[in-house]
Amino acid sequence: MSDPTALPNFPPPADEHPLRGRVLDVLVDAGAQPNLDTDGDVAFQANEQTVFVRVTEGDLPVMRVFGQWTLPDEVASDPERVAATCNEVNLSLNCVKTGVANNTLVVTSEHLVVEGADVATLVQVSTSIILSGVQLWHERALGLEQGQTPGEVPDDADDTGNPGANGSTPGNS
Image (tube, rainbow, N blue to C red; front, side):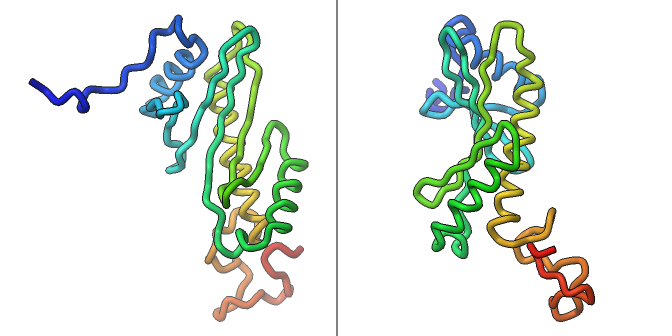
């Protein structure tokens, strides 16, 4: 007899959670290998990041695509900087909300999903914008240039890592 804990986690019947079933179908078709977590959220990997989809069924179904990231130590100790960065990103991007709880950054995109909505496009666009949102949040919070990652030396830096001849520093133009 096989170990019952080794059995795959089968999704509930489609009529029980129709929108979540559509989300699962979209992700399987895209090769994302989604899983259901203990909260009933759909979890999948995108660009080596874990992304979740939480669905609220009802008369107006809502799909919330979100990710969670631990704050870098140099930012977590400055709550004013954290709040200002969240505010800046929230005002800069459409369809994205950012917030912080317990030193965890949450970036989310929420949509009402009416009958006949293109769920595949909503999932794809939402995933893309939350990943862009978390990148923008870290760039702004850490004072990085667009596309620069923490610890990376700016393109115009000299051999010592100091700003180049134009005198710019990451995050200042």
